[in-house]
Image 1 (spheres, rainbow, N blue to C red):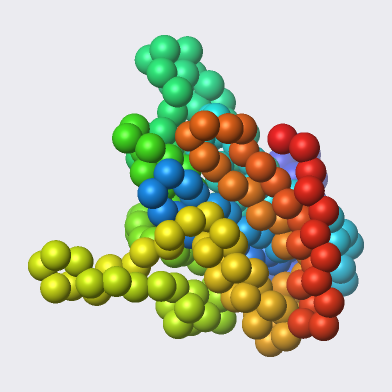
Image 2: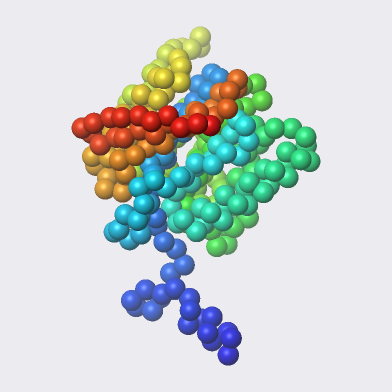
Length: 241
């Protein structure tokens, strides 16, 4: 009897098919350089075609120098955040070391791969500093495969964001003659990320008007800033911590 009740209570669409996932939107972008890492996330929360919140927080800290951002199904994001933060605390206690970005990336990859049979319907970005203080950013697919770069994007507007970032990211020639991306400072990365979100806000209805930016540096606690990006006006509000 109980089994029958549980089966009937499972989420189904109009045709009676099992649908465990929901897409609650969200877009993420991150950039890094020497001594800093910066992540930007829109704060709009969707339920179907409705905007249920415009101040939804998508970025959480994993350590003093590592941040994680999520988008997609809110239930899966919350579940993954809980699992990863639990493992991060276990690592910090067991190793007696602060977790750096590369360790956090491996932890997230393993946690997502462990759910490959019934994967989380979400996108995930990790940004932070490595053991030598250099910024690193990673993006993951639903089964834990990761990609690292100077800029990464995830979520609903990832294609628009990445195309703008590719065009605006500064480049320089290395000693071996190759062109490599190079942000001179965190302010350069901030302006590029905001420009990408301004373009995305005009072209993708799922991107909200408010963007949360969180900066990680070696010498100070993460700094958070909320920016209004609607293509017409810009305002900033600095938040503590």
